[in-house]
Length: 218
Ligand code: FDM
Ligand code: MG
Image 1 (cartoon, rainbow, N blue to C red):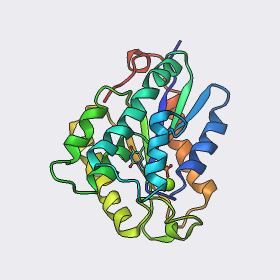
Image 2 (cartoon, rainbow, N blue to C red):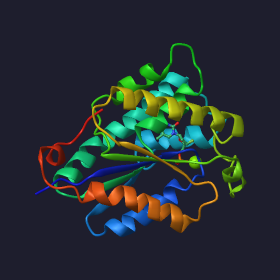
Image 3 (cartoon, rainbow, N blue to C red):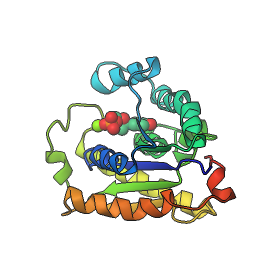
Image 4 (tube, rainbow, N blue to C red):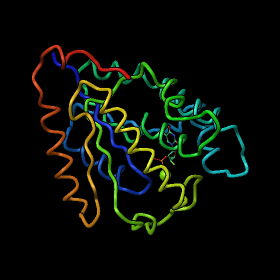
């Protein structure tokens, strides 16, 4: 049996990641599970949730980074088991958000390579789709600004960090086309969903060879 595929949506806040992951999950039914990070329902997730919502709740940037990573590690075994039993897993944010948001803080010594270390060994997506936009249109959506990090200058720096992380990864990787970028500017939800499906279908339909039975890791 071929394993399930791990498909990740990354991007800035309010670029439609959640909408697009829901649509993709519908298309991949019935053997598919959606996992969103941060997974706020665990105890570590509850701390993260409090940190994001309560701007008076202070934690060192390094500690916050490690909590986000720990939150991925507590789900890692579940993700592996799902993939091995042939279920596709769609992720709404993961390692790249972890690196981009933390590195955007420019905390001393906490550069992108520091940020990647605690995530080494996590299952690596077969396909990452980065949703980006040219403008600030996404900030006009309802609710923006309520949580920590939802500030336009910080988002611009996160965007720059995302691009640097993807560049570094492509340079180091033998795998091709693991990361795909979709610019959503001026596109409808349906148009973006069609582009997502064009990228995802060949990945989930890939034949069973060794590349498709072994899980990739960071
Ligand atoms: N975020 C998310 C991080 O800073 N690090 C991480 O590892 C992850 C997964 O959490 F601002 C940030 C990104 C965002 C916030 O995410 C909450 P959602 O998608 O808005 O719930
Ligand atoms: Mg958000």
